[in-house]
Length: 313
Ligand SMILES: [Zn+2]
Image (cartoon, rainbow, N blue to C red; front, side, top):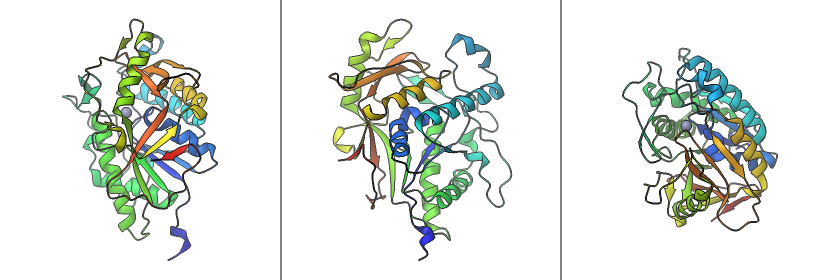
């Protein structure tokens, strides 16, 4: 076995749109980068069908090219805040025999409180219409090149049901297999899914509810939990948010077209929330004290050197 197949000690995150790297894995990325270890973020689309929140950016809504360009800038600033220097859009990864392509945001509709579904009309180049196989070949190329110790992405429900997130999960799952089965035989030591402790999420929503001033609204306590929310004993890893909260707050604020009402507070206060924010639906969400992850089934707890701040259950 040649030494070239050894993991690099790096982390590779697979995300659907600009802002997801911060919203679902921001503390992990900042912690990993802060430990001086390699971090790569792969973003599948440029989020050109996202809903635009601030009035001063309203001109971007519906103008896919302009919104994509704007969100590329937001992403670059967020990655800088998190300390991430290595970023790729998945459609920029060249693989033999694949024609140049552009993977577009598929869009979504809200189908319930905090739950997204597929829109009735998809753009021609929608990411969800790109074959899992074709997209996974590109991602596998990145995996064998960067040789990460850990690959992180979404659980099968895509966190909250967005079709691009569900697709990104499938692409990631196949890509780690292609990397392991390909000529390089690179097996990622650990694949993890972003997750939240459902009780902490509920408690955090209740804690931040009094801060929801119109037009923001508190999350209804009986609202159906998103698919990433699981029982606490299913959470395998917890990343401490307090040591990186300034970086995380700055990264959230960098995504101003998508994220509003970002606040962080002294993490020595009681409670599970150390901050709050809202997306385009205006529901005020907590920034939890720890960011949770699960090991993907079949991807054992390989010999991974977790950086300080990542607590293994
Ligand atoms: Zn997204």
